[in-house]
Length: 425
Image (tube, rainbow, N blue to C red):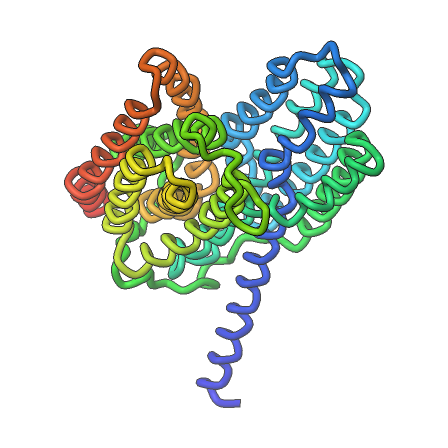
């Protein structure tokens, strides 16, 4: 066999390996998506089974899950990196699979809110371990298509719950919510645990050495403590909080907004009400945004893609606030908001790894991901603004302005700052 043929075979083998790794973590993300996006299916059945449990008390379990899933990911990311390329991903995802299974099994047996909260705590730890490791895995294996790879991985989490809505509702309806918690705990946790043993990070020289032509990447790997001392990280953090927060002000309130606009129960398509059609379209847009804008950023650069996405987002908020009282307009403009909001989970991880390198990518990404937790305060703030003003218009205006500010920061602050930082490195 000639040298050229040998090289070609090696390249094909490497490509097969890294796509296998990517598909594995995407499936893992799909398996944990229900922890966040499928929770709503269980709330009303739990209230019916436990009349003394107030809705707010049940939802505290969800808040605990989000807090643990978000804020402790840097710990999971640190273990995934320091345990090494072969042990780290396996260990963290396997442990995560066990914990998410235990969390939902506890939910199935919970006869008190204390046990329900314990299940949320354990499930949050497990979900965070799987999420942090999976996103870090994607950016390490695909330096040449980092935006696309992390976008596909994040899409598994953003849209994975769509695949199991009907099965979960069927089990709840026929056997009760306890059975749904129990059996899906075993299925989801079991699949994650099995796939964990396939995972390993790339060895030096095993991945392409060149980035996409429009993407600037550093040759230095920053330790987490170094990252925390850089202005770039805190600028990215601020931008993440602003975009995530502006999105949560609206995306977490779609049903109340539809009700106030008078379109919630208007029959729109095949007997489905506006809010049902909007929910389906929003889920598709949210999942599709992540690989779409990730791929775009691989080809034109991260900051330029941010500018395009967040400019469209600003327009979408303005359109929904001004024209969303028509049923189809509500569906289209709400979907556009989800399309231009969901991509933060591909653009920011890609930009972070481009800037701070591969060796500690998982923990560095996890530190940035805590911005999602910081941004949740905008949801109750939006409710307070609406109650104080009597309408959603001020909320839409604030969301629009926040997106415009982030566009300016991306083009005129982040891009030159990142260039100087990487040149210095």
